[in-house]
Length: 102
Image (cartoon, rainbow, N blue to C red):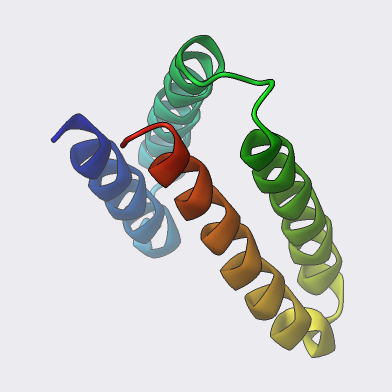
């Protein structure tokens, strides 16, 4: 399915970005990752009903997890909290997917 392929593509791009040493290739990979993520964002925003309570819960959980991830970049002690928050966010996104019949 398209969702699986998009997820795999983003994961693979991230793995390549971490390993790439050539700055030109790194920029190209990062540009592609940003482009795919942006298209996914537009797709979700146009398809998913934003008035669903599960949508708000998923968005809030992702916002919290992303804030913790940003903080964890500067303080590795916050990684455990980030992992927990990302798991909660994934649960909320799953609940939303179930709600919309995905």
